[in-house]
Image 1 (cartoon, rainbow, N blue to C red):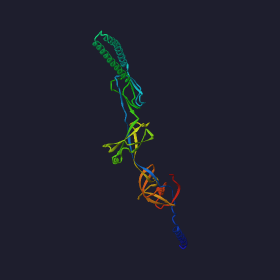
Image 2 (image 1 turned 90 degrees about the horizontal axis):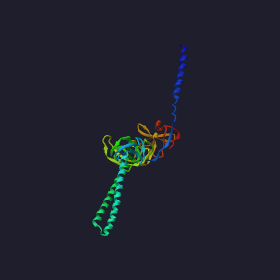
Image 3 (image 1 turned 180 degrees about the vertical axis):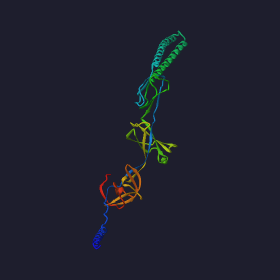
Image 4 (image 1 turned 90 degrees about the vertical axis):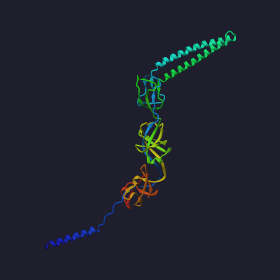
Length: 359
């Protein structure tokens, strides 16, 4: 027992020294947060509403037969692009060729009769001057000449009608567009008015844009609308609102806004269209990048940089466009705020700036 006492005493002294060392040790400060910074800018922001609509073809005629006949050629098929005046179908014109020969023969017959009647009138005029025949005989010959002239005019009109009908056996595209449907085939007999092909015009299109009824009061004809479509993704078409349909669609509770698109290559009827209507603009909005705005229990905040520390600013945000956020309250233009790394900061935190962010 006497031998253990010195050992216990030594151990006690060692433990006491270790405890004093722990008491004198102070906790190390956390390293500064590494961030990038940016400056709050003033810029012009547009107040817009966006929607997705559809494109309608304003010109989609179904081309019908203007004369009866058998189809002998179909030169345009579903999906083909056609130009205005392009031959797209041919009907049998043999019957009209025979009718033309008949009408031409009638004209020749009447012309011969008219020539002979002209000679009779001339001879009768000379005989009347010599008092060999009465005036009534001359008048009768003149009336027959006038009747033949009228018959000649009628025969020529009949020939023109035959020529017109014969020309309608060749069917031409009435507009630039694409063949949507081929209705007839070679060998079909069609009557007047029977459909041959359906062509969808692409020169003039109409965009139907549904907007929620709660913003209907903000929309009016003449406002600027920017349109894009997946069939021509590189084109942004800027047009004006043409009209607003007065009724709210019962199934969707949306207002149908109409805008026309003219002469835009690549735009197709039936495709979807993305629309952005400009309702107004804010010429001097204070904006910061979206990464600078952080959500905290107090609300949305940004961290203003002051030397090697940051100060938390509770802000109110407005519009969000193209990666920037409008600050309506809580931050002034020109102030430096944290950008990358802002989500890891707290109020009064120490920072180290790595580099300035590009505008």
